[in-house]
Length: 209
Ligand SMILES: *Cc1c(COP(=O)(O)O)cnc(C)c1O
Image 1 (tube, protein in one colour):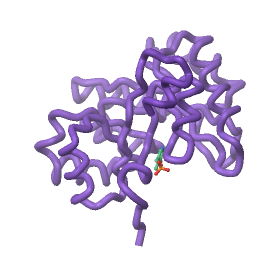
Image 2 (cartoon, protein in one colour):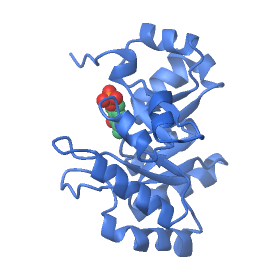
Image 3 (cartoon, rainbow, N blue to C red):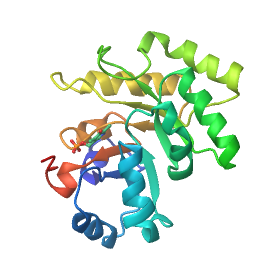
Image 4 (cartoon, rainbow, N blue to C red):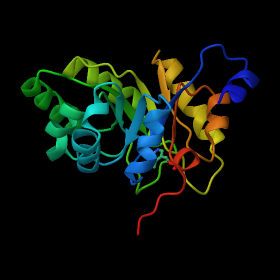
């Protein structure tokens, strides 16, 4: 990460989000022992077990990002558990978050997920709808996201998607740019990522069996 930042002539170092989903407790324990402070999870329930129970003590000192889609019926749990919700992409989601936040007395920061590859199966606001979505967030809900997030299509070069996300973030003066995973975090950093989400390259392969 530092080498990539240096290549790009960046002085602001990107943050590492350690994606702990599916990883065994022993690996997470080791990661915590290194002093890693930012973790990412893609499922609310799994995150709740891991960071609300198993590692509840460590939870106090870390920053937790939700990087998977948020089902509105999980909004209350998500608001209580996460510091940053990276996947806001519909008014229904922001509505549910605000309602839950009202109840919990705490509103996490959030990012807007952009479906840069315009994939049918993927969540995220379409690039052409982003201006409108951000305008609606502001006028209807008085909400401004901290930044943008994307997951490029698996079978394409990631760089055009990273470039596009950075351009959109700059246009709207949004500071946080969450992009890049194990296979492409260096490219993402060279193209302006402020946060990279790395799982397997950090912890080892996930065993879904
Ligand atoms: C799992 C996941 C990652 C991490 O993927 P790796 O390839 O293991 O680094 C990053 N972002 C999101 C949204 C994920 O779901």
